[in-house]
Image 1 (cartoon, rainbow, N blue to C red):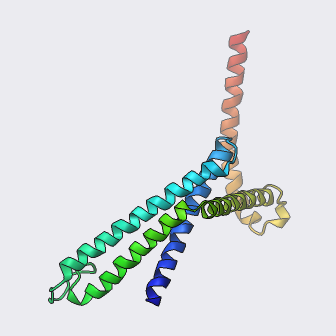
Image 2: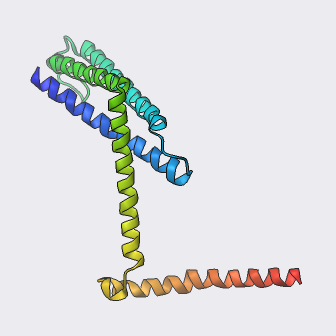
Length: 187
């Protein structure tokens, strides 16, 4: 029984990480890209939706294991592949079905718990903020870097100069021509 409880807790932890990631990404898109305000209630609905979808996946996996167990019962020949179960696998398949069902049950309980949903939203918000913080920090480090601080400056200089010649100068020339053409047509 202890192994089942540990497997269920591990499954719940993985599902919570997936839900948190999904909500973190939604927070980033809604608040940064679309400029919406952050509201725990809005993202709480996303948490509940994610948890229930993951619970449905776990229920489907439990049903799949139960069907595999029924098919495996009484089959004693050698298997032909990884998921070609035999009678000796029946006990393990039953355990796995119980574990999947246990994870689904716990996820549904979490989805109904306001404090748990709020905690997941706050964790997702913290993770989103951490991503933004890291992005800004990396950008500042790169933008503010002086040539003598970059150990690869000399190696990459030729590639940067080639890019400047082939891309940036061509783009600049096209912009100047377009500006000149507009100026002539307005005159």
